[in-house]
Length: 205
Ligand code: MG
Image (cartoon, rainbow, N blue to C red; front, side):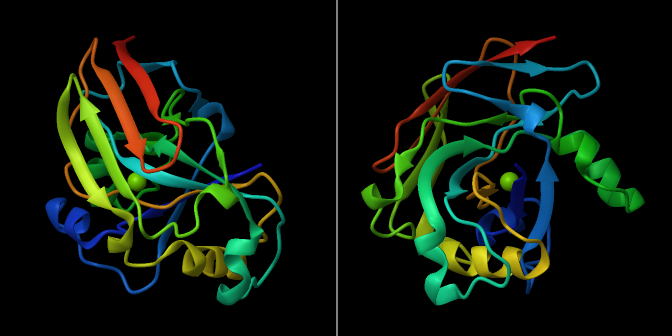
């Protein structure tokens, strides 16, 4: 199983980090060891001082494929969930400056909280969903999946054109604007219309 993540898939988020808006989707991977479930604890490790939340719609492949056609792509999805693409922003900024990979910034233990899945049939249109992240009761991110630069079907087509997708693979589809740092003890609540919500607590290691 692999966890494919998409960077800069909402224009306003790309701008808030001072990034250019890419033509093609930006891909990176997280290791399965970064996954935790609803109710879990996010560990803020000593290696970073700036862990930020990125709430994202997560797609799970039911059937895989290579070169999946965009018109067919949503039929390959068997479930949708709320996910958090946690990011050590200080390490990512350093990596970007040096032209190094994002693996450390994105792949730390507990950096991929994932809620329970709703069946694909419960989500008739993945581009018509409100997506929110609330930290300590304060709304930090409040976006709309229709603002994705590359919608879910296009992402599946693109990813499967460069790496074969397999049943059970996950795609984190990018985050809207409003990312901010997490601190010890923070209660993080993430929700997307029609999906089981996700709640985790952050703890300093
Ligand atoms: Mg992200």
